[in-house]
Image 1 (cartoon, one colour):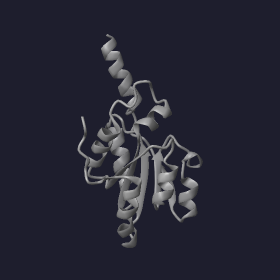
Image 2: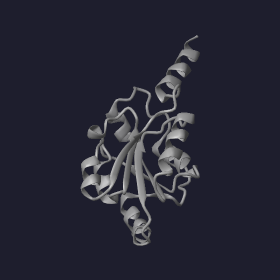
Image 3: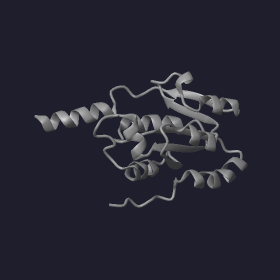
Image 4: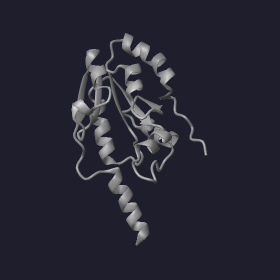
Length: 165
């Protein structure tokens, strides 16, 4: 089943066209990325806090093949990349979504060159892919603490345990 593509899901080529007028208007761009397989309150908290850091918020979504290579779990991704992107694009705090197929978002970050690069609080700044590129181009890199008690892995375990009993 094909998921209809919202207008704010762009390819890595389209993103450049769309960002030109945004950058020309002096707007700041924030970028984060992830799998976002089962969207939960922890994700929403993280995304809303990230969106507050700039004028225009872009989320990079790992493609299905990229998720397989991450070895998150044998069952992941649970939703297709198109489904995950459509859900993400529907959030009012997200301005644009780009699906990337590489193992990391390094190429996409270098293409976008955001003013602010954000990852979750489980990362050290020195571990964040693209951090050097962003800071070398005058941007900043930060982490946002997770909302305690929320985890896609824990939700996945709960679902599996429910079906086992």
